[in-house]
Structures are given as C-alpha cells and as structure tokens.
Length: 92
Image 1 (cartoon, rainbow, N blue to C red):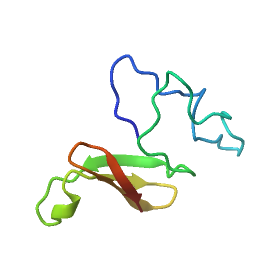
Image 2: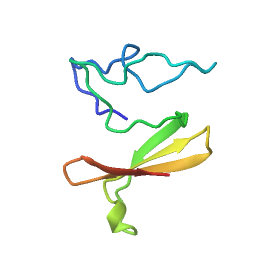
Image 3: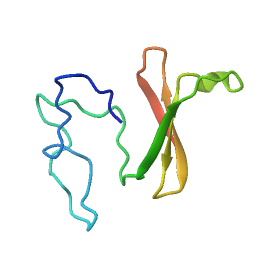
C-alpha cells in the first residue's frame, strides 16, 4: 500500500515484495535508494480488490483506518492508521 505523490518512484519492478505468478521473485530488492517504500506490504499478495477508509461512528477506534478486500485469501484486511496517517499495524 502506497500513498501516491507526483514525481515519486515506487520501485516497480526494480524493488518489490512481489513474486511472479509462477513462483520466482521479481527482484532481489525490496528497497532501493531514491525509491519510496510501501507503507504496508503483504506477502504473499492477497490480490487486493478494493480499498476504503472507515469514517463511521459505530467503531470509533477504526475511524480513519483503511480496509482492503483480498481475493486470494477471501478476506478483509484492516490497516490501523494514526491521526497523521502513519501505519500502526495491519490486521486480517
């Protein structure tokens, strides 16, 4: 999961946590100088299928957190964010 900003390099495919569908790694590097690392990386990839910020009042501790569906695991993952948008944890 990245926060996209103009002019930034997010590494693909030189730096990535991803694997080819057939199994081998795409790159030996998960981070390189001059590239922006992801805020959250799931390995193996859950095949994300949507993302939403929670803004409701029923679960106040979740307010501002991100939810992402995963096709591969048929799950929903919550990314716990603080008030400044920093990742505190990732739960599935």
